[in-house]
Length: 116
Image 1 (cartoon, helix red, strand yellow):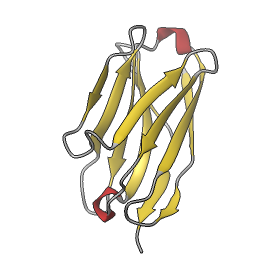
Image 2 (tube, rainbow, N blue to C red):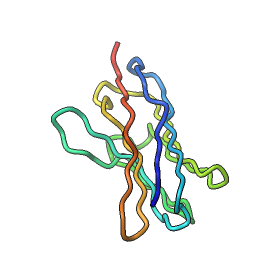
Image 3 (cartoon, helix red, strand yellow):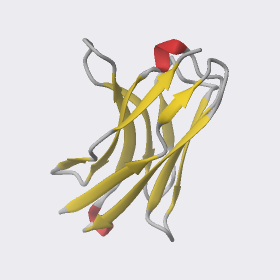
């Protein structure tokens, strides 16, 4: 079992920045991909970014390339998503995800609202 807890959501103005964090616990040794997904009202959940471990290879949705950066700190068992140049269309609930090759695990989600 893997437990994931997100933090860092909130309200930010367009063009602003926000950093999300995800703390992992449990059988984290089995995880080889972690990522961020988001779901806006009335829309399907979509991939934002992923990062492999080990290796740290990253992958981003086209809509966030150049604006968002995913990173991880293995010593602290955390993953972060630095979000810059935020747009109203980035408004969504953001979820932390972990995959060990057999099971997927999800956090409870954190709301990000981009509005003036």
